[in-house]
Image 1 (spheres, helix red, strand yellow):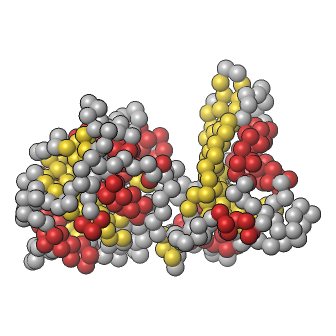
Image 2 (cartoon, rainbow, N blue to C red):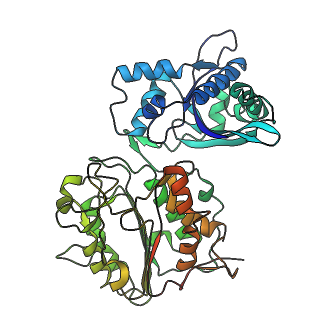
Image 3 (tube, one colour):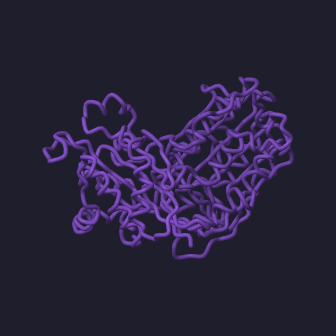
Length: 464
């Protein structure tokens, strides 16, 4: 028997008087949210409620105050706090209601083996203002004959409670010394980039610098007329770091665009009438390797069936007017006199993510094949959806793309030289990577796609 459940804790550093401590910390325990916390509240299982209650009780015993998630959610829903498509707005509403400054995310599993039942806990502590990780701890309860979720959760929590609560001081002044509050991740209710995943650190170093290389890195998260792409900004920021450290690109040669508008696309890549944009002008003929990364929405035009990148202000019902057509994108890339051209896309173009009332539309854009020395690696096939990796706070495909480089896992021949084709083979592994996790986490098919005539050219060469 294997039952999965996730717990989401949020707690605040607030002044109050209680029988436990004069300057205690208010804590609220919430279920982990796949889409948003309101939906998670409606779909809570008995086991997740029991774990919430048990951990809350444990924290109260340590001198913290635990607010009622159920009570706060009922009040929030009554006041219309769930009437938004922005999951960060919902989280912000709950933080405001509970007066929280810090929160924990806890992933848990209730399992059985030959020795009995046990619970796994994986806990990340976050600063609610910056949404940055303060600590990460995991534990497994002792094996037991009981199926009592509360008892198993209590046992696992007792093993790590000190490690977690040392970062949740009952004294606000002490907490201020520990936590870096310089970089908020919510700005006027907009999601901003944060890097908290294992692939965002310990980036391997390039053997040689590539001073003439040029990159364009785009992450589109905060859409105004359709749902957000939660981790696109994280994807773009992490990719920029890899380009600098692992690829050897100069930071000054990277165009990093967050929440690109249609004007941003046209300025960078040109349009139908004017094909030469900023990218064209930045390239040294025959000397510059060009790398383009995009994470965000893509979709088909409902009338012309062309594939479009979706700028943040584009209305999905008027994609032909507000979108940036990939046909123009690839045509304009074809005139750039680059030494090589690599395009990496964490987006799908079936429309399944944007149009809930239609079946996915299968389109076959020309793609990179018309570009000399051009190669492309995309996150999914024509009619598929590109999923998120919520635990890692990245697009599923982007996470495995970066992991292939970080661990040198894609380097099959162990020569510290990684080609695009090696990365493709790693991300496409049906038992360990994107196809498997897409089915396991989201119940969807997602298979990366590679195109190009020189996919075995070395993309990254690392220090030994």
